[in-house]
Length: 61
Image (cartoon, rainbow, N blue to C red; front, top):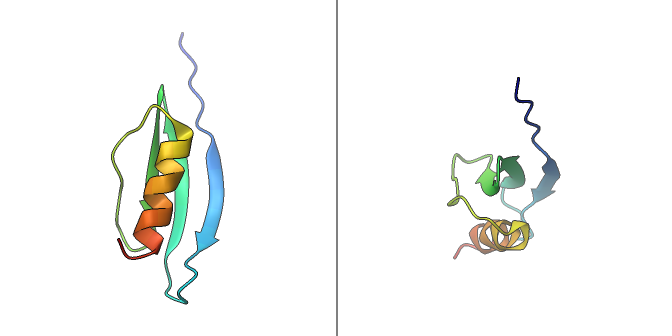
């Protein structure tokens, strides 16, 4: 029986004052950034890149 676990970084509010809350979730070997607005970043092997995706989204880029 395989057991998998998901780790999450907590929600972070957008600096520009918008209601964007981003999280990163581990799914197997990959990490995915997502936002309360419905946006979802690509699956990344590097957690740092998923966090960068979330920061770029919050900045409006």
